[in-house]
Length: 519
Image 1 (cartoon, rainbow, N blue to C red):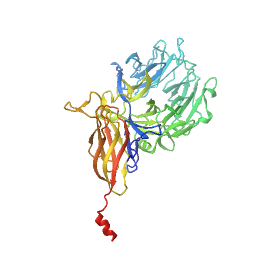
Image 2: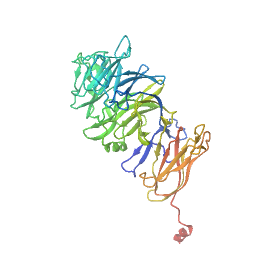
Image 3: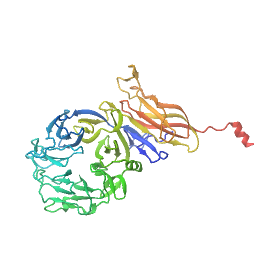
Image 4: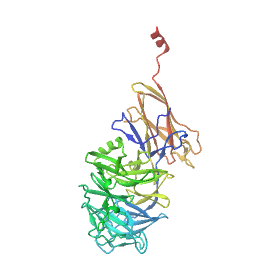
């Protein structure tokens, strides 16, 4: 029988309720009603090295991470340490440099490395080119880069203590930690008029984050949020409050908001909070905050020491729109399929141990996903045809639902994972003695609802072209509650259509005893 083996991550407060885990697997629901199965599990994308950005030997403050990405008109920019790099299609780069955080100078090329996320946005005009300016916010400072001359340019009266930036309707906007936001001159990020500054007046809260979506500028506080546009602005300060946009939900992590595809358009998703309690993940449904986290994830969030450092970004992979949320302190990466509303986890091996996924920031250019490494200057291509993380195995784990007959014993005669078999590489994988071998899946089982698991069993899944293998384990014994775990790591395109179970309930009494009771 099928028992719904394919699914997302849902680890409830109590394992007796649910202990399902999906790490480096994402579920997909078939859109064809005549499909053999309704749900499948597919592997998350692997990482291949595109290029490695160099560390400046003179830059002692460099954080070992690619802290920000931006793409505009076919050009891709990333910030590593205090330097701005342009990533080129031939897996090369141009280093436009920086001055190691030293304030001043005509060029204002002080990309300060504070270890936090970098925000970048393009707009404005320069030398007849539009957009002609790239504005960078890092470490509280602004840096302007001319896209026509590929040189840093000076900024007049630059805002200070800048948290992040965005661009709406011809204006660059800078959110400052002093609880206000300032607007540039029209189409010019190098000129910031002193009077074009405002504070949020519709709520009293510390401003934490801004993000543009559909020509609206969302301004988040810790407990509330509101949207602005230029239709309601004035001549001095061009933005005004959209009256119906006020939300009684704020923000927990300032770098968590991201623009995400949803339906036929886009919306924003963020790690939300308010005055009533713990954090949750919200999506803007128009001007209404809609909860998109589940109780299992919210329980996890409530039990973390720090979640305010979470960083969010969005991708589209094989038609799935994903919102990725990396938690640096918790060392975890959670991913939401925004169309299905199902969560899964992503993980990379770092130092031989499972850790948060390596991707920290993302752009799509040259026909590929380009992500920055959270631990180095590496830039990776992220692809469904790559089956490792830069040569390191990807551990994919699925803990399925618990099967139980409540208080009765059952015998598990056979468990089969409906893998698409025969997908081993050519030439084949080899064992320690150099002999050809199948890709293997590791099966293990729990008697205590997924709290602990027994020894792993190695199940062959077919060398290349061997499509008739069945990934089956037999004679598994007697159970009151049975929870399966399946782990794979071989570099092949793993796919799971379902899991099948052949159980029988507690054996009946001997016929002689049954007849004796009838007398």
